[in-house]
Structure formats: structure tokens, C-alpha cells
Amino acid sequence: MARRHSLLVRLLMVSALISACSIAATAWLTTRTTTGSIQRQQGESGARDARIYDALLGYAATHRNWDGVKSTVDELARQNGRRIVLTTSKRQLIADSADAAGELPAAQSATVDPLNVDLTLKPGASDRIDARALGPYRLSEGERKELRARLASYVSCARDYGVSLTAADDATGRPVVKGLDSQRTREIYRACGDGRERSVTKTDYEANVQLFGLLNVCLVRRGLDREDLTPQYYPGPQAVIDYLSYRSDNAAAMSCLDTARREQLAPHVAPVALLFLTSPAGTTPPKMGLSAAGTTQIVLAALAVLMVTVCAAWLAARRLVRPIRALTSAARRMGAGDGTVRVDPIAKGEVGQLAEAFNAMSARLEKTEAQRKAMVNDIAHELRTPLGNIRGWLEATEDGVATMEPELVSSLLEEAVLLQYLVDDLQDLAQADAGTLALHPEPVDARDLVDQATAAHQGRADEKNVTLRAATRGRLEMTADPTRLRQALGNLIANAVRYTPPGGEVTVVGRQVAGNVVLEVIDTGVGISANDLPYVFDRFWRADKSRSRDTGGSGLGLAITRHLVEAHGGSVAAESVPGTGSTFRLVLPAANGTPSVGRR
Picture (cartoon, rainbow, N blue to C red):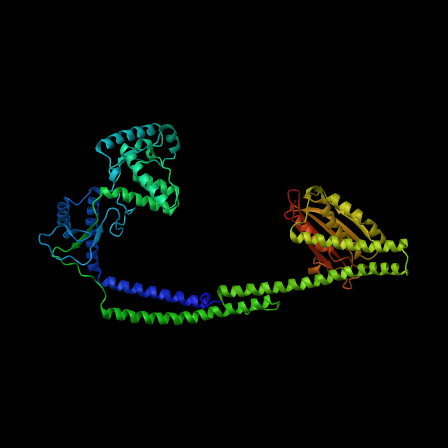
């Protein structure tokens, strides 16, 4: 595992980062406390500088040059108590609020360019191009009056449909309609139009034609598809921006739009200028900072805190990593085939719970593996005897030692039938495990099922001189697969008859209890010991450990019975007293119940 993925390393890195952040925050708070008043003054100065910058930016956005800016500069200097100097990009003087020229700082305070707004000085701007830079989109006063009249008519039409709209000038002085997010917008569109055709003027149309041409030139130059935009649908540049950004996720297309706007607006705005802001005396405000001694103290304190944090994190991480490494080692041993592996859950909290869960999983896997091996042995044993008999008699017949007499054919057929029963039982169990056990539920009366199952085993009971009878009370209506339910009940009756000695009695009882149909098979047989009782529904379990077919079946009947009953949404249980008899009980939903598993 790479060191950078180690939990120990990551804990140390996180602790060190937290310490560094804490130290930095402490130093910042100390500095802020010491220089608070001066910083407030600098903040006020910054706000004044931002106002000056915004005013000059607005001037540049609405004028083609800087002629006449001197009066604006002087007024801003008087209002804000600052010396304001504007120069060209080559530091040629444009305007200076001071009567006597003084030396300018080495670096300008800002660059005044309405096509490249400084978002630091104007954080509320949504675009690097100043919104006041309208250029060819600037409407004449006559167009504004005409547009107001159009929009007033549109607002009146919408009002007739119960939607309140308003017409007002936006930040650029353009009349616009507000409130178009109404829930009845579609109805207004059908009746009054969407308002765009009313908002586009001749100036907008001509400016759009120019802008779309520049946009497509840029797109073609970059190897992109042209944008097919209709000029009469976009009232003002912001409408073009909104539509293209909504319609296209191509960054190159938006970049071309930005380039086209700058190219279109360049002739209509003032050239780029450098802005210098100083105190009226010509000196810049002092910059605040930590002294060398203060810096040294903070660095030493930071190192001390960092060392303590790293040491503490190292100790904590080692305690956390130790049980995780033990779990990793145990998991690898389990993957190598060691099913007995366990870990000592010495840790507390989540890691301890993880260790306990691991131990439970390991124990379950060990038990499952043991069951798998036992099942393989049981299946091999079950198949060996009938296959051995069939093979032996066939070889004897082939060698001429025996002849195919009817009695021999019947014996071989009996062995083949035993194999077929075993295969069918195994197939039923496989379907139950896979959740594909087919059920065909229908309304049935459990009394009929009890009578049919009892009649089917009456001959075997008579042979053994065992009394077999049914005892049901009332109607036992339910929804179930009658074939599968007879199979489950028949397995219980067959077992009861098999383990009941001659002269004994087997009773099949059916009754309804608390909304359930309860079927019981009660015998007076040999019974089952308390140690064996929890395992009677396990696969290949037999009361007779000798595995003789004279005293037991394949050992799958009760396991299949359990799966069939559970597939109907019921449950099975067994009670027994050795030497007295056993009771096997099926509890199934009554008429309103439905199978919960395997239903098709």
C-alpha cells in the first residue's frame, strides 16, 4: 500500500493542516486586533477609491475620449479628499486634480478600461465589460419614448389577463418589462406575444447585425459553426448574452461573443487610462505589517504548536491503526482459506464494532463451509448405494451371472426411482435457495388438502398397522398452491408414519387461529431428543444416524417442507417428547394472506 494512502499518514497530514490553520488564524486575529483602527481607515479609503474608479469608469464607457474629464476629476477629488491623476498607458498626463504636479507612484492604483473592468474595485459587476458601455446599442431619446409606448401597450394587454407587469428603465436607461416570471406567462405569450418584438428598436437591430457578424467571423476563424441568430429578437446586448449562454455550453462560442462585443464597443469608449490615487500632499498611506520581532515570535510559536500536534496525532493514530492492521491480517488469512481466524475486539467504538462484525462473519463462513462439506458427503452417500446396486446388477447381467428377470427389473427400477426422488428434492432445494421456486396460488380449503394428503398415505399406514386419521374444524379457506402445500404436508405425514411403531396413531389436525390456518401432524412415535430437535429441518438430517433407508428417507423432506411453507408466507415448528411422540406444526396465512416468496 502506498504511504500516501496510509491512515496514519493521512491523520498526521490532517492534524498538521489543522494546526497550521489554527496558527494562521491566531496570527491574523492578533494582527487585526493590533492594527484595527488603521485597517478601518484603510477600508474607508478603499471604499472611496472604488467610488472614484466607478465614476471614471462610467465616464469612459459613455465617452469616446477623455476630453472634458478634468471637471469630473476635480469634483471627485473634492468629495473624497484624494489627489486624482489620469494618464495614458504611456504615462502622458490626461488630468490632475492637484494644481502643482508631483511625482507619481511607481505603480498605478487601477487601470480604467470599460472593456476590462477590475472586479476587485467593482465586485458587484457581472461582466468584465461595463454595462454602461452601450456603444451602437445606445438609444436616442426618441427611441426611448417610442419604446416606452410599445411596452405600455404590452403591459396593458397583460393586465387584461390578470397578470401585473411593469415597464421601467434599467441601469443603462433602457425601458424594459419586469415581472415576466408569472405563472400565466404562456397565456400572455399567446395573447400579447412574448414582448421581444415590441422591445427591439432600429438601433438594436442594426447593432445586432454588426455584433452577429463579428461573432461569426470569430467562430469561423476558430473552426466552429456559425451562430444563426435573428437580429429582431434581441433587445440590447444583455439579451444576446443571456440567450447564447443558455443555449450553448461551448466556452469557445462565449469567448467569441466577448471578443466581438469588445471589438464592436472599442470605437465608442475612451482609451485605456492609468489611475493614480494619493493623499492630497502627494504621499501614499503607510502600509501596515508585522515587525520582524513579531514575525519571529509567531513562527516559533507555530513550530511549537505544530510539533505538539504531530506528536499527539502520532500517538492517537497508532492506537487507531493497530486494530485495523489486525483486521487486515485476519482478512488475508481468511482469504487464504483459514476459516478459524478471529480477532481480539480490544478496541472501543466503531473499530470494536467492526472487529465483532468480522468475527461474526468469520464464524458464519466457517459454519457454512462445514455445512457445505457435510452436504457434499451426504449427497455422495445418498447416491452411492442406489448407483452401486444398479451398476452391480448390470455388470452381473453383462457377465452372465444374472438374468433380467422381472424381479430384477423391478429392483433396478426401484433404485432408479429413489435416485429420481433424490434429484427432484435437490432441484426443489436449489430453486428455493435461488428464489425461483414456482408457486401457483389459488383459493383453496385446507380441509380438502388434509383429506387428500391423508388418503395418499393411508396405504402405507395400513401396512405398518398405524392408525392415520384427519381432524379438521370448520372451513379453512386460504390462498395457496395446492400441489406444493400437499407436498409439504405429505412429507410430514410420511415421516410420522415411518417413525410410529405398529399400533400407534398419526393425527392430522387443521384449525384456524388468529387469522392463520394451523395444520399439525401429531404422532405417537419414538420422538426426537431435545439435542436433535433444533436440526430437524436441516438438509440430510435423520433421526436414525445409520442412514439406513429402512428407517429413513433422503433427509431432504423436512428441509423442503420448510422452504415450501416459508414461500407461502408461513412458518414451521416442531415439538417432541422422546418415547411419547412428536408434533409438527405449519402456520399459514388465512384467506386474506398471499405468498411472499417465489410467487409467479
